[in-house]
Image (tube, rainbow, N blue to C red; front, top):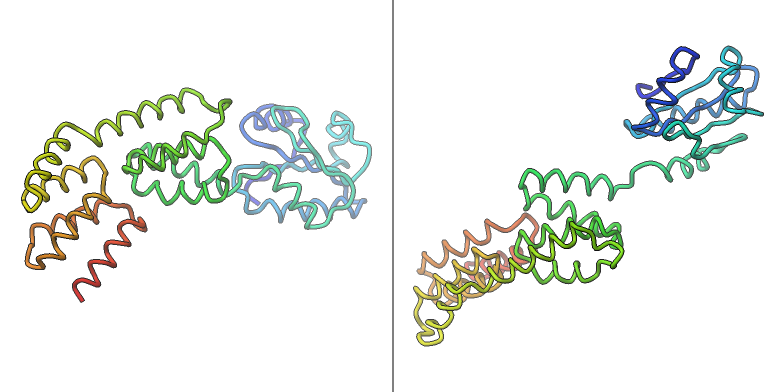
Length: 281
């Protein structure tokens, strides 16, 4: 396997002291004359084939590298020791089943939600917010208690106009997890709420109250709602206009533009696409 190495006195310091600073190192002690240790070695090699760079698999042939076994204080085989930062972290002793090995490794391998969280963070850093939403939502479904996942999801919610959902999430963050990232998001949420009710929007709403049948005012208000991610209200206005007058291409084009701006799989987009389809056919 690619991510494995046989430990000798020459590379001991590099593997045990240096490599274990950046990744976990599973050190497996074996000897040809002890079949159980050979069996564990082979099982571990297979089990670690698909773990990527998370765990470095290191083997020690106790027949030729007895000094290393002595340094670890190995008293019997089969034995495997998990090392982090040069120090033993956990271990296996005695014969193991495939199930017991899987259970042992599962404690230290990245969980699916960790991979999704990392992927979502990358997408957010690249300003691909719409793409980040389904990824971080999936991570949240797998673990809805973790504050780090909640914070990323709240950030994505704010940037996609889901301010109510963001507020609910931020309110669920425990005090111990209310760090600088949390405080930054609370401030961002306040700004989003202010922007969502701008003076321009308030003025249009007032004009529309005085002239409720003015189609141009309704289109302008819908466009303003869309700009501040109040998409549900925007779509509601535009759909009613299209419903009243199927020849109103301006309203229909605005409606389609709002739908296109929503992330793939967004429930709101799905709802209005169905309504539009029913209206047209």
